[in-house]
Length: 466
Ligand code: NGQ
Ligand code: ZN
Image (cartoon, rainbow, N blue to C red; front, side, top):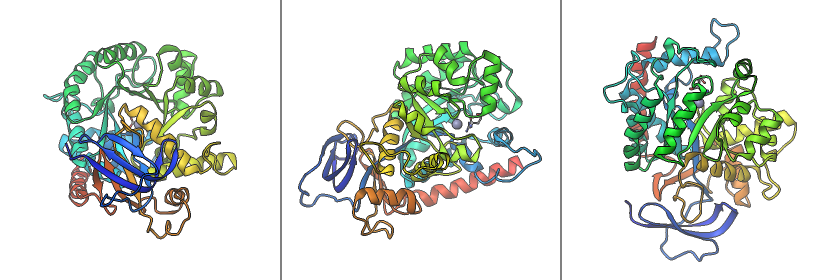
């Protein structure tokens, strides 16, 4: 527990929009006790050096894939390089990982995330077993590595152990490459029970992720969710869905329904759910899925990198659909860049500008930040929904002295410059999580040390996979 704290900001982005002269105060656990616009600057109080934004939850991460970045950007033997050929390479990498390597990679990644404006992360964690596919003596060892990594970096965590059982619709047996992911439903429920106290001790939230409809048969989805409810009836539930057209076609062939349609008809989808990607939806699926209150988990840089297709954000939002952003495979680790890419995809598709602006918020970067924080917090199942009483004091301070921000007339323009015109990281000055400053002058104090451990882990991994 840290001492209670306070900070004064001339401009702060509150859930209802930009406010002036805001005094933030939080308690010893980092929860906001008061958020008061129009406050006089208290004598001697710490002052933000620029506009203050809510911290961004990263709603989708496979941490180990950060060490794999840069290794698949070439055309292989497959003349039709695709998501599926990428996945075959990724499986080789996943097959070689050790617990120590995962801890090192995740710690460095979480430090990078903090430096890039993310203050919490949802870890969609599916490598469970030893390299030969046999469970570790301590079944929770790899999950524990992620919990320790988040604690060391100082980032908030929602841990989503992944249920994975089959290689395709219709209960196709798993492949050799999937040996480390596979577990029975009762083994998953035992793992959740084992992890719950560990998560609680570290302030992490525990949820569950049926990997996809391809990887979990219907009965297993139902049984696992019933078990999760018994443990925590409001725990978050995440699933990959409708990311690739081949997946949509295979689902149609299996069930006569599209993935999102099938899920809505066979599971009680509600605000606990995060539909990761949900790229390929019909107008009817948009309408129905948005009405459940579920969050669409958008990962613009990974979706572009893997050639998934373009999410129709305009249609989704026209139905009041909630959404947040994730860095997924970590081809890019930068909250502002994900927002920029999401907006640019929509501009390219619609030949319009400022597509994700709103009637009540004309500035697209401001509107997107508020929506992505709200959706990300909901998907995280943690009180990280921005600068409001009762939420965690998770925030980011922009550098008003940065060349691209200086002399701009409004905080809206400064945030726009940060998202669209800076290097999208260079204008981040401080990042705070639960009332503790984790990044100062753009840097995390553990950056050098954790990067060195990351490099060593990757060297080792490469020597065992090549
Ligand atoms: C994953 N990643 O689990 O890492 C997946 C690939 C799959 C993305 N979908 C594997 N981006 O979906 O089967
Ligand atoms: Zn994913």
